[in-house]
Image (cartoon, rainbow, N blue to C red; front, top):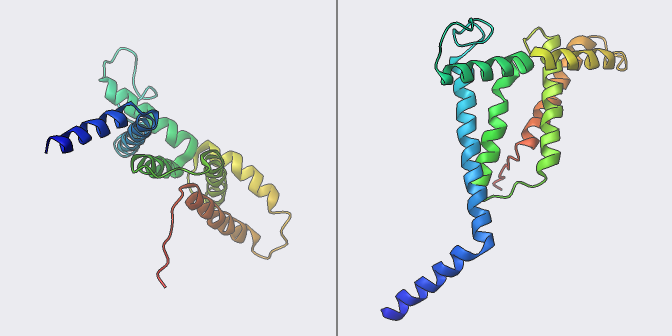
Length: 186
């Protein structure tokens, strides 16, 4: 019995001192932090808006508000200003990456997938903006590019077709950027 306890002590002392162990724990803490940031973003988007009293656009400097109200209103206002309704998809990416870090699954090709997420947000916002949905300022920028691309494709109902194709291509890029794996059961 004494030998078994001694082996456990040796195992744990070697494990605690290894740099790989610390790196793994750091990545897990980073993943947990991303999950908490995701929760904060969703709560900010859900509970706060530009018409809130804590918003810097709707209140004066003479009024005192709690810091959490100011931060929540600012986050919500900034995300909705730039991304419109697509701002609800931004926390999904952070949640997926945080979960993958927390369960120690490697995030392969993180930089290309981040770029793919930005491209997908531009494509989706452009398609939705042309269909009359609020997509913020990113949608305005991407809308101009998509309107210029409509002259390339000779379609009868190209206005509707190009927008729907752009939304579906953007959704495919968005799912790829999340690193979701689909299992097939044969």
